[in-house]
Image (cartoon, rainbow, N blue to C red; front, top):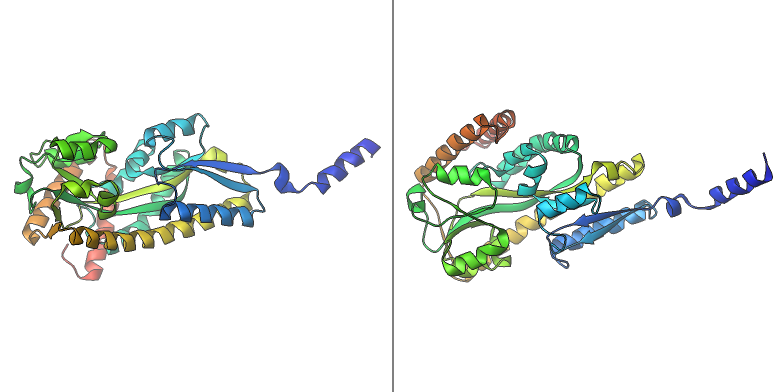
Length: 336
């Protein structure tokens, strides 16, 4: 072997692999810096950096500085970002199959969520992979509840109410329109102003979200039956993720899966505290009758069937989800 080749080979062996193969993932999120979510994400990133000897790093862009889900997805497509914590609405833009978790009045308890997700998450993870994204963990946002200035105990009480829905949310629009309610679409930043001006008087939000966004200052009642399960996912562009070797991919998946599981438990604990905080501030939780709740469920089921026929909601996954929920209710001995 020539002297020059020997010199080059010796140099290559002397340089650590991590020095020449460091990959930094740029990740956007709406979570403000300093929150529990961001603290957990940064801890996960530090663990990954240590276990990969610095080959894999994360750079976070918190607080929505990269824009909403649509903006983040656009920046992902052009390579400005590598991933993001995407909400349920943003996930639907990537893969309509993820809409299955967003159907109102589908889940009645955390037990149902855990049972169904254990069986449905792998399906959605594979579907998102086909759409070009690696799922490092689904993120739970808790249950949203109807909140208003007057008590809402059934479908009849919704008539005449000015109900907010997120812009572009075809499912919520269909659900309320089938109840003869004309919802008012607004982007998230405009909701508080809408409540203050009277443009809207009814919102769907988790207890945590209502406090964080200050919506609780404009409502007096919470209808204490789950309206919708809020979820999102931490995604990384599959092409960027594939640049990691197999060992490092496994480390990233393992660590971030642990973080997502921990965040689920923390979110549930924080939600209980937030519910108590709302009650401490004089907000009243009202419980509809079983008959009123079943009437809501029946109406929404009809809407879901219609949306499935129109291709908005994936029929096959809808049927699978319903089967899992029926199984859980039978095992738990609760009414179907």
